[in-house]
Length: 218
Length: 51
Image (cartoon, rainbow over all chains, first blue to last red; front, top):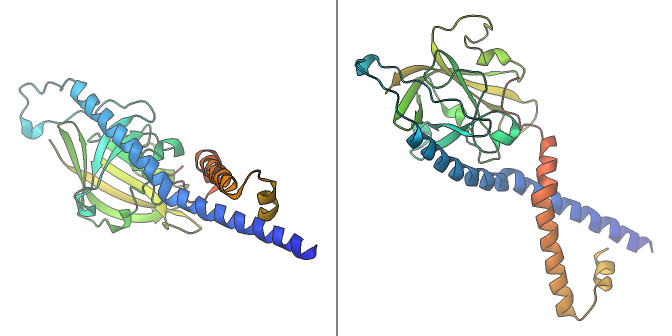
């Protein structure tokens, strides 16, 4: 009888172990499939949005000084712009959605609501997963000052040059201020801030922050 | 536990194997569609935003 009880306990523990292993598979791989699937739909949706948006008239303005208006901010969870970081690979390309809560970040990188849009004065802030959910910002730590981060919406493009990257506390909301760490200042620069989790796996998580300045739009 | 569950299943071995396959498949669907999405909110390190 004692052996039988031990056998039950053992089998239950083995079962729990298998379920935990499956949970790891879910977190690191299955969520990636879900995100990849979502990105396919978002990409098509973004394509429809850009083609149905009437190109703003640039009139007689010289193209050299033309400033592209940022696309209209979509509803939460809807596609906003495409982000590309050439140093992370030719194929590195994601559709950024509006919102940075977990349901939106499960779809892809997310734009912090209330922060500037691409190319706008202020701070265009985007968050993305470092692990799981296809980990769009997995290699954000590889970005060096001078690297270029590109955003596009149809024929409009905005390029930012990375100025610096650093680690900070998860509560450091000042990094996404229009003027970083100066909540009430009036912005004069066109900045971009990317945020993700660091370390990739582990405990005592901080935030990896990458800051860039707009260098080109066309 | 599994020996007792196996004894509960009706029919010859082939039928029992079939039932086990179906039950395991159902359990996997339940885990990946319901349990894991719910449990993932408790995993630390999911949050990548400041605030």
